[in-house]
Amino acid sequence: MSQIQSNIKPCLWYDNQAKEAAEFYCSIFPNSKIISASNLLVDFELNGMPFAGLNGGPKFKFNESVSFQVFCEDQAEVDHLWDSLTADGGEESMCSWCKDKYDLSWQIIPKRFIEMMSTGTPEQVQRVTEAMLKMRKLIIADFEKVFYQD
Image (cartoon, rainbow, N blue to C red; front, side, top):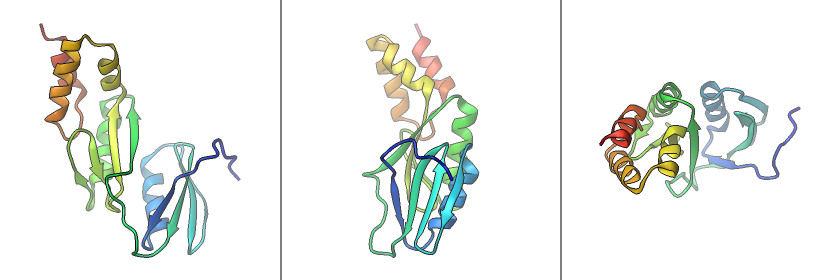
């Protein structure tokens, strides 16, 4: 049995696909596993973080007011997560946002983007921001170009 690292655990409400969703997420994120599953509740970990999935019925749906931010080491990780989450009925949105096939919202963010935004000059930050506002999936190389332009 996994030891809980935090006293906060997100519980995700699904119509009746909690186990299917947990399996999907565990196939995408490293260091992930299903801890237990019943017809009502699935406990799982994504990259070591605890989650619960509840088969609560159709009354409540996900919306963009809640999303999960994932900070990625490099473009390969951004590409993998973006492509996996938007596959099979997921959808792209703007500025790092996407939805998976269960309509859960994600923000897939390269750590390099955060670094540029926190260390750049006001002009560099403005250029990176303007570039980001035109993107769906964030592209590190495009940020690097505008960050270092003269």
